[in-house]
Length: 248
Image 1 (cartoon, one colour):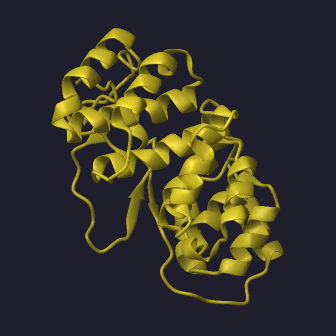
Image 2: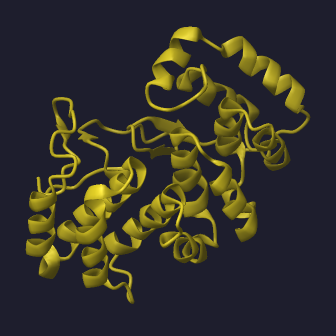
């Protein structure tokens, strides 16, 4: 098994810029997180600027991936860098319900400032793939309530919510966190991953890969499960990148 990226995405062998604070998401997009605080910007001003960044072609491309915004992510990150960290503005942008505004909110918020129940509500509101992915990757994982939320979401009947629980389980698996029932995780993956909805399937597959990579005593079973189920076996993978297919 070879190592895969966040949420199981193909890994491309590029060198990161050491001067930036960068996270990675399922689609491999980099998101630069604001580091300093400025004040005085209003929601109306931000929404007006986002409207000027709207591009029909970008919206068309994003729609193919289930996202409903037309703002180029590089321009969105540039706006976040200029706004810097503004927690209250982030909360207000989130409340607009606009996808581009919510992505921007994620980039300018203070991840540790959210209460557990607040993040639970936000996760259940995050219905588009990128907002969901960024919220889990850039906010929840850095929040002190991450473990409580992992346990809360893991077996949720909503597969989108459950996928967040599985995504949060991958890091403890990779870090050899004590108390994880790895055979039980493999049992669930073996029984449910094949027929799970895409987002949940992706998260379970990433967890399967990490079990095989990090835990030699479970590697043979993890590879066998991956090969028998064939999940993401035909996933399109660019040259110089690692396929998310777990047994590779």
